Image 1 (cartoon, rainbow, N blue to C red):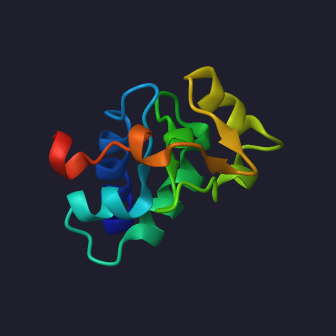
Image 2: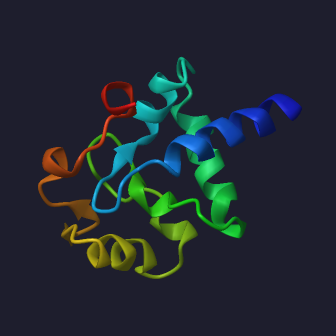
Length: 108
């Protein structure tokens, strides 16, 4: 369990670096951290992050730009937070996903 907690901390550190108006994917974070097949762990970390301040979990979506974690925000809160940052969402999918995509492997 301690390994997961340490991994979660590393994930949160990356998520805190995602600029406003940008999004990344679970897999991109896992790849950056060298966690082969770790996209699910990133998802678990995002689900567990709602009690933490300064972890913008709303900026982490699936590889196709779909708001797969929205149920953990309640209602349309994930979409609302993204739209406040200038990202358009239609039917739970980010419009222009590639132009909003932030890849930690190339940005950090």
